[in-house]
Each structure stands twice: as C-alpha cells, then as structure tokens.
Image 1 (cartoon, rainbow, N blue to C red):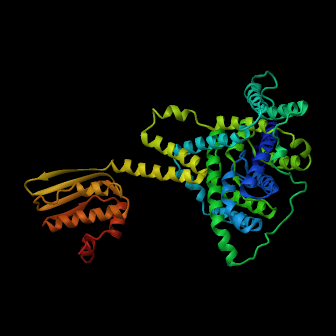
Image 2 (tube, helix red, strand yellow):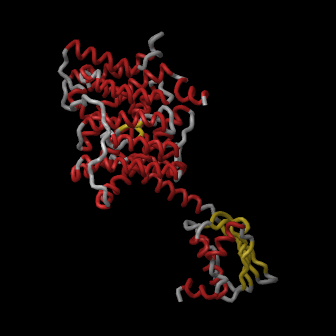
Image 3 (cartoon, rainbow, N blue to C red):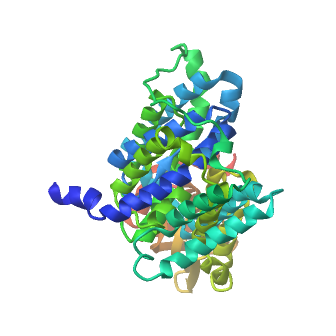
Length: 495
C-alpha cells in the first residue's frame, strides 16, 4: 500500500509539480476555446477541466495522463446546446459518465488490442496536424510582434534545456510562458492575450443538478449525444493511454481508465461542467515537462482553479503567442517523423491504413471517424492476407479411383470461395477424401463452402469422406453443417 502510494504520488514530486503548472497554463485557453466551440460560457469548460483533472488523478488508470474538456467532445455538443440549452448538456454529461462506467465494468477497454500500430501512428500524426492547424488563427492577420514572440518562444523551448545547471531543472515551456508574458507586459505590446479569449469565472464551482424533466422524452433527447460522447471520449482516452504508455515504457489499466473517465464526467456534470476525456496534447506536454505520476494531473487541475480565481489578473496577461509556441512544440513532438521514412519500408497495406486514418481525421476533425476507418481497413487487409494462406492440393489413386484433397490453412469468409474453386466436381470419381487435418474452419461461411463441396461431389456420384477435422472445426461443422442432414440439403442448394 505504502509502496504503491509512493510510486503513484511521491516518486517525482518536483517534476510533477512543475509539469502540472505548465499543463494548467496550457489548459486555460484550450478550455475557453472548447467552451466557445460548444456554444457555452467559458466557465463551463474551465470548471470541467478543473473537475475532470482532479477526479481522474485519483480514479484514472494511467498516471501522468491529463484529462479535461476537449475539442473532440465539444464538437459533439454543438447541436444539443443550440437546440436544447446548457441544462440538457449537463444531463447528457451525467449520462455519458454512467455509460463509460458501464463500459469499464464490461471490460471494453480491452478492445484497444484490435487497434493496429498503423492506426495509432495515423491517429497521432493526424492529431499533430490538427494541433498545428488550431494555432493558425492566432498567426493569421496579426502584427510582426506575434511572429517574433512565437519564434522567440520556440527558441526558448528548444534551447533552454541546453543551459548548464538550470536547463534540466525547470521545464522550458514554463520558462517560455513566464518570459514572454514579462516581455509583453514590460513593452506594453498590443497583442492577443488569454484575457481576450473570454471572461474568466470568479467563484468556485457549486453543486448543480440539471434542471430538466426526469422522463423518457429527456432520455431520448440526450441518449444519442451521450452515446457519441462516451464512445469518442473512451476512444481518445484509450489512444492517449497507449501513446503515454509508449513514451514512459509503462503500462496502464484500460478498464479502470474507462470507469475513471465516467466518474470524472459525472463529477463535471454535477459542478456545471461539460463532458471531457484524455487530452493527447496536454498529456505529451506533461510527459515532456517531466510529469510522471498522478500528482502532476492533480497539480494541473488544482493550479488551474487557483490561477482562474486568484491569479486571474496575471493570467489574462499571458500572450497567446507564448501558448501557440508551446502547442507548436507539442505538434512537432507528437508527429511520428519516422513514419515518413517508413513509407518506403513498410507494406503498402500498412501505409494505406496510416494515411487513410490521417486523411479522415483531418478532413472530419473527428478522431473517432478516423480510427474507425483505420480499424476497418486494417481488418479488411488482414482478412485478405490470411485468406491467401489457404491452399488445396490433391492426389489421385488409380487403383481405387479415389482423389484425396488436402486443405492447408485458414478457411473463413475471405478464403471460402478459393476453397470451393479448388475442387474439380466434373471429374469421374468413385470416392473423394477431403483431408482437413491441417486446416481450420472459422465461421459459417466456411462451413457452407464445405457443405456445397460435399453435396456437389455426391450429386456427381462420388462417395465423400471428410477426415482430420480438429475439435474446434468439428464443433462448428457439426452445429451448422448440413451435408449430413438430408432435410437441409435441398434448402442449401436452392431447390
């Protein structure tokens, strides 16, 4: 117990505290921007980010991962807020949390094993592109001061770590934000600041039960949105956990993360916040700034609230150029540059999956659509590839007028047609032996192909013997096969 507590909370105190402060600074404009996207007051996103980060620090399954209000979730809320208002959004947030807790108990976090490495790479690259594109409005139609400040910020971020003694002690993104804020205030630069994003709240969040009718009509209104929010939230959280696992060479509890996200969203909804999930950009900022344990996530949430309520007069002075520089650093660090070189080395199917995932995510700005497209493509390519590893050979015994077909490989929906075409049904034979000792039947399509082969041979007057079925294949053939069930033969052959 004590060992676990120390590992999860106290093993990296200085790094976690400093990284949490950097993340909190980056969360402010993001939370405000996502609130604007969703069509709600900025305090809804800020309260959500505070609550989700604090709760997930205790109940999440991935130490060092940052969860808060996100753009992917905000995009799904627009129509609900516009047509029904904030109260229904809060109710949908509560239902989202319940659905995510159920998903955790159903162990749906394990579904991440079906997401291939090429899909994860495409997801990461697409996110890097979206993060960079999100900074472009801050770099469009602005004065030269903004470009100079952004360039200076990037210089600080990448060069400060090389300074002796202090370079490794203080996260360079934090130095970037502090220095550029001081420069902007000292010279009185007329550039866009955090204060221009929207009005910050001046009170603590309070318990707030959604003011909606508790009836079936309300459920029917919020259910479609809650399902979408739950799926996108869990998908983005699971993908983020995978990336942070890779960055830190550690493992995470996916099903606990599902439950934790649900509990955090319920807490957010009860405090007047919107639904959220894990944030890849902020999680990478946290990891690259030295954050590793749950303390960094807790620090980010607590310091966010302190800044908004106590340090607001300083917070509003932070130039957006400083935060743009930090997010550009995140974009550059997130993108898998090795994947470009691997385009020449990896199989074409792998490259197609990665590129399609990137294109769909960037085109729709919806991470779930891109991952779904990538997973489906990867599954199709895999099925096609495995289908090619099925072969049928034959040998003829003249003395007994018997032909023995030997099947090797996997027989399922993708290879069933090739299986059927491998037999010569017009050959005059007394007996046919189908040897399946080196084959495996996976589905009813494969069973139906075996049925047709056996029945066609019998109709040509040959005796057919099927041998060598392994236990699993024999079970599915006995259950769904009809070649030894006369009543079902005519139905199968279409008579």
